Image (cartoon, rainbow, N blue to C red; front, side, top):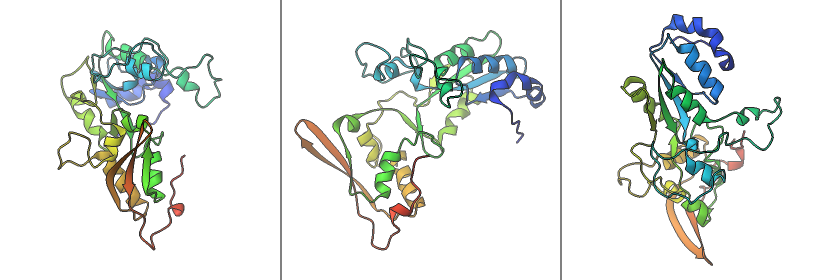
Length: 280
C-alpha cells in the first residue's frame, strides 16, 4: 500500500506524484465542491482511465423539499437514480457567506450536484458517481444514532418517539460495510453512470422499523444492521444492558407515541455515567 499525504485543496500540484503511482481507477471520497471536482479531473486526465466519486442523496429534489429549499407537493415514491434533482444549488448556504476563518465556511460552497456535473461530463476522462445515503457508525461526525444509543446506555426503560419521528423515512448506510458498495463501480463497466448505494430502490424503513429487530418486510433470519450496531455499542461501553427490542404503542390525543422497551441494567453493572458517551 503506497500513501501520498498531501493537501486536498492543492491537488494539481501533485500530478507528478500520481503519475508515478499510475492508478487505473481513482476513487475520490472527498470531492465536496465544483472546484474539487475540476481539480480532480484535470489532475488525473492522462493518468487514470476512470474516476469514481462519492456523491450524496442530498442532490435530490426531495431533500430540498424536506428542508424547505424547494416548493411543491412531497413525492412519497421511492427515489431512483432518475429522480429529479434540486433546482436550488448550495443547500447549506445562507443569505450571506460565512467569514473565511469560520470553521463552517466550506459549507457555503458545498454542492454534490456541481461535483456530479463535472465528473460525468468531462470530455476525456470517464466518471462514475455513487450517491451515498446518510452514513452512521464508526467515525460518523454527525453522531446520527447518538439520541438512541445514549438512552440505552443511560438505562432508560423506553425510548419515546413522537408520531412524526417514528414515521420518518431516510435511507441509511452503516460505515463499516459501506466499502463493499465501491467494489463493482471501481471494477465493473459502469463508466459515465450514476447509481445509489440503496439499490434496487426500495421504500426506506421508518425510524420505528429500524429500532425493531428488523425492518418491515425483511426476512426473519436477517439481522437489522442498526439494532445490531446499537447492541454492539452498548456492549463495547461495558454497559450490561439487555435490550428486548419490543415495541410498545400507545396513543395520546391524536398523536401516537411509540417506545422501544429496554430492560433495566442488572445490579452491580457499571454506571452509565462512567461511560464516555458525550458528543464531540
